[in-house]
Length: 336
Image 1 (cartoon, rainbow, N blue to C red):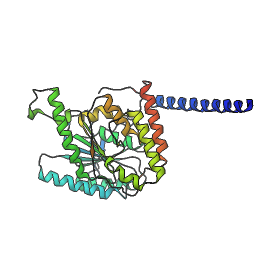
Image 2: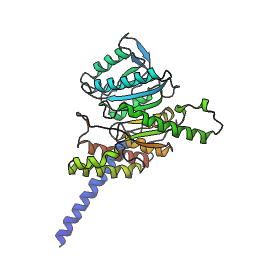
Image 3: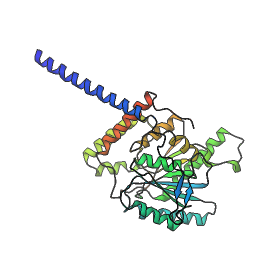
């Protein structure tokens, strides 16, 4: 009996040491990333591949010059990007031809691709002009979150939409998010200033966010996925609930829209650079009391996804960092 107690005590001691070591590593890494919301590379100009001249790069703090910006993060998307961009440009050009007041831009952010992604993007810039499509290279791979943050920080729209390079969500669904944002923004604006006239209303000045959601497809997905994938996803959703709280059922859908004011507030504060930046956005929306809308979108799985089961541990690691960073006060909130 005494030997069993000794073994149990030894096992408990080792477990406590491992746990203490893990917590220490998390806290240290959170401290090391305390300034990660500030970009290391400041983008001041963009290259026009047609004229080979440098074009001044805007900043989220500048006044809006377009109605809509679409931010597309791309990492080794040579194969999937062309079809998605063609569909997107067909929609945008068609809408612009019907509504002369509608203006847009597509911002492609290359997250350190080693294939022909840059060539594909430049072909589209040449075809549609640098005013309508812009290309920002990150140089080295930094993560989807950083690619989207960079695109958001250098966009010109009053409304900013992030969408994946694979075209998994139909671009026409942006109107669902857009219409709901307009409805909530007008309500928020009238509450803030009842005397505000209709003609003075600018959608980009009101803070609202809209999250595209695949939650309505969850029942079908549960029936077709392997049991262990369902188990891991349910576990991940539980951890997300503990880290960011309730409010958004599908945090990971890559189809989200923000007003310019909301994007400026959120993306000057985002620290996470890879998979779980979406969860941090939910956390920050709650911290800043930015209205969050969750809107069902049409979604289909496209072959070539970068997400795998190995992504789950990385996601949990980032959630641990986020929790430690904000709970200890090491990750400061900037009220931009």
